Length: 303
Picture: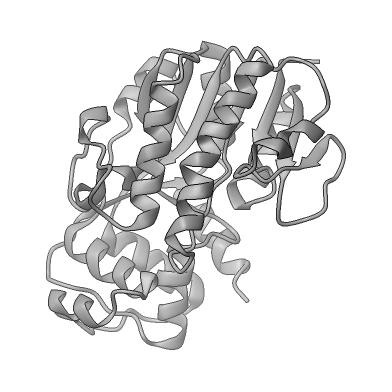
């Protein structure tokens, strides 16, 4: 049996894939779940409550992967911070008590706040925004700050939009709008969008576990695509065409609570390009799953 690893948030879209893949790679994987009943080597854990960790089986862990988090923008701010920020601090405290030798924080490119829009955003902890942005962005940024100040050896992985069957943002925004004819874009440029095929993430984490902690922050992107390319791939997979509809940037003022509308508007106008060259170089990594495969699987999984 390989390293003993605990995954907080092992029951979500990313966490489920991560738990299965690391198990298949020989790791002894234990999971904390919240939205479904626990399975083998799983415990129900509410990371916002420190006493919730007491039910986890005894023993030390070589690594703790914190994938627990709330991403739904309609969630009340206090809950968002209780899980994404204070939940991270609680997980860190518990990990320390289990002699964790490597804390891996699954974070988000959104921690840079408004700078999440644009091109060529590097791995730079100084760009983290604790005070500007929506609650999700600020809560994830605070979680990162807790990791850096914890004293535990760590690696922080900032995920871009995650692509695959059951993803919660790319396919509901692009795929669903193409399917029902409501798709639009903003502006005439063709900016780059960084994504990660969910199937590539376990390989990235495996590389991190093999290398060990380096107290660094990395962009965890696997592909960088022109906006038009990914939209065209979705349209082809759906057997439809791309509508020529354009929306003005100021239309965001009347759609501030519609995350899918804002995703189409801002990403088609500005892009969200987060090069991952530092990660690839440090971990001798190249993605093995194509983004086109990710689109095909995402479309096949659409209801």
